[in-house]
Image (cartoon, rainbow, N blue to C red):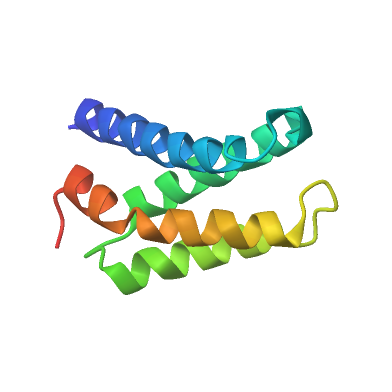
Length: 105
């Protein structure tokens, strides 16, 4: 049972991180530092971990997880608040993909 969860977690992290990086790369790639890529990677991984732990995952619970995790990075001076808002919005928009990958309602 553990292997499917790890596979799903990896797939979810990939989907989340891919969308966030694509969002950031939509801007000038030269402006995206390694710190921002690392932060967004950490955000996506934490969201995937929290999502995996959630019982009876719903859209509201998922959005709460996104708000909580992204909010924890709001004090980090290495990433602009405007960028975090975009990341938050993009991650919330991925609800249907997350729902599908976790096979939950």
